[in-house]
Length: 226
Image (cartoon, rainbow, N blue to C red; front, top):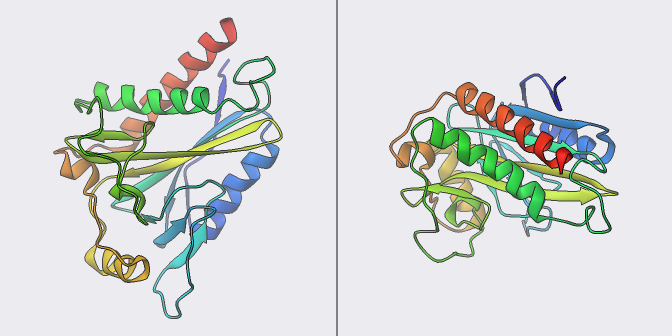
C-alpha cells in the first residue's frame, strides 16, 4: 500500500494553484503529493514579500502560503510541486510539529536523488555567497538544489496545526524575455537563473517526478520504522 497519495497533474492559473496548496496545509489527513503547471503564466510572491501592485501587468500575481521571494511560473520553462504532511507523519515527540529540518531533508533529498539518477552532478555547496534578492532563483539557501552554480529547485515550507506543506519550483530554462522583462521591471532587478538548461540538462518532468515519488515512499517508510 502506497504511503503517498498522488494527485493528478493540474494545469491551472496561479490563484487556483495556490488555493489548492493552502487547502492542503489546512486539511491534509494523509501525505499528499502533486506536480502542477501554471497556465497561463503567473508570478508568485513569498507570504511576506513587499510588492506594490502595478496596473496592466500581463500575468497574474499571487501570494504563496510560504515565505521566500518571487518566482515566475509557466509551462515550458518551469513546473511546481507540493508535498503535504499530516500531523504525525514526520515522527512523534514534543518537537515533531515544529521541526523544519526533517520535511526539508525528505523532499530536497528526494529531488537530489532523482536528479543524480538522471545524470545531473549537483553542487555540494553554493558556488557563491547567498545574495539577498527579490527573485527566488537569484540566490540559494541550504535546502535548494544547484548544479554548475545554477539553482535548479527552490523549496519552501509552511506549518499549521501540526501539518507541514513543502512546495517549490523546478526551473527548466530562462523564462521567455517578454515575461522576464516584466518581472524585472516589477521587482527592480535583472533576471538571474537559467535552471537545468544553464547546467547543461534537459529532463522530462515526468521522469524527475516519478523518481521523487519513489524516494518519498522509501524515506517515509524508513521514518515510520524508526
